[in-house]
Length: 134
Ligand code: SF4
Image 1 (spheres, protein in one colour):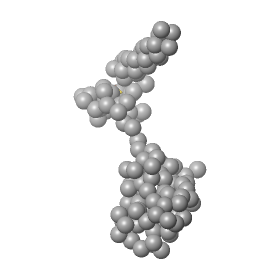
Image 2 (tube, helix red, strand yellow):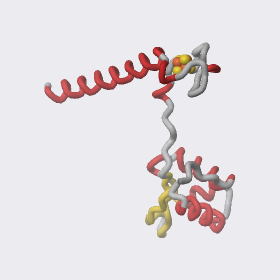
Image 3 (tube, protein in one colour):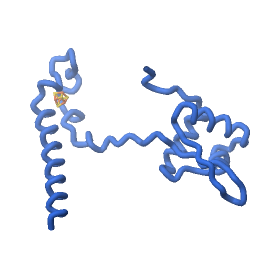
Image 4 (tube, helix red, strand yellow):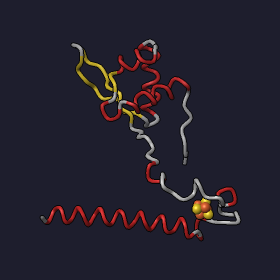
């Protein structure tokens, strides 16, 4: 199984732009314009990205003609959940790992942080249930 997809520079730029426009995507002509490329080169890029499962092309009638809307199927990675993790400021960070002096599987700091996440999530669920009951 392939864990990552290596893209050319142009495909990468196109995908980054489409990511920025989220579920709305861009008309292909808008994307070509932003990339500063011809429609011929742009079509090649779109087809490559679609074949790799990174975007979808949706037929749309716009500006008096049929065209394609390009929408990213890749979603931005949300790292906010690890923002308050104890690891980044930890003084043992450089010595921590599977074969390190310290291991995340035996760390009380990471355990209590994970438990706090579970508690916070349970609290949110409870609040939602209460809101539905009232
Ligand atoms: S798992 Fe624990 S010991 Fe390891 S870096 Fe994170 S907080 Fe520090």
